[in-house]
Length: 418
Image (cartoon, rainbow, N blue to C red; front, side):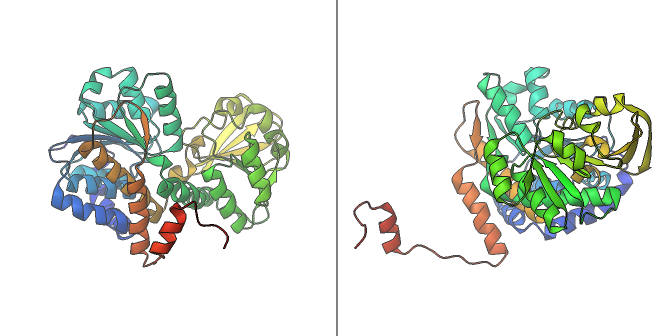
């Protein structure tokens, strides 16, 4: 019997429907699941996961359980858990410690409960699970063979740990697979962020000055989708190459100090803290909307906002109004947390199909492959290419193959202009 702490067990049947709907749109992961059922590569192994508890995550958990794993799961964000999915997984004998709207103390209690179950493999999204293991629960390290990390912010933290010599077991950076960041980060974040903003506000995007802080793959995807909705996109950056790319892509680029004066909607996607600060908010127009699509709720300076607020109220779910000392009003979405999960349902199943197929196959690589040194590793090329091939096959898309003559040409230095 599983041990779980969730919101409402009676939601399990609804969670099952949501999971089955997601599964219909995740053919690559289903392909992997069928093989895992036959081969049982994870028989009697314990996995500990800190992930957004969504319907897509449930399909990943199903896949790992099909391979024989025993799973303990907590949420990787206090507002991202879908309570129906948590109930469904708990009914399937997963140890689930997740509910929407946790306090910070409750959140880390849940992470601690996953560690209590003595995982052999860790599956992380943001590196809070790995961070807690390395800081306060070091007794768990000796039992852990390796782990995976899903998102950019987590990979940054883990590489810093490895650089400092603090990382004690190997981690595969799933985020860095081509079939993850080129699709999940770009198309997933672009669409789901707008979905969250629209669900929270019900505003028209067309014609509005839409400021995006950060032009990484998430920022690129968001800029592309916002322009498609008719918004006038402005990009802020600290990286000169990315700023130049944004200019060449047709977007206005300027410092946040200037963008603050003309922006109507602001979204941070940088992975850094205090990107929108008090001095920026003082310059913003009356009615400006602030949202974050980075992993942690630190990109918008909430304490700075509170310090210049004389009154606040909730207008509708995930939309808070802050009346400032200068008489203007600013609106914060989803408490400054991941807006695509706080106000919407996260990335579409079709892109999570590739991300979670990478997760499942990388876990298999950790279990069946040679024992690795405690470093951060890239996804093996063969896994990345397999996921792409399976996705194309599921989409009924064919591609060309090199002829023998072409193969010879590409490896030869003797053939030139004739």
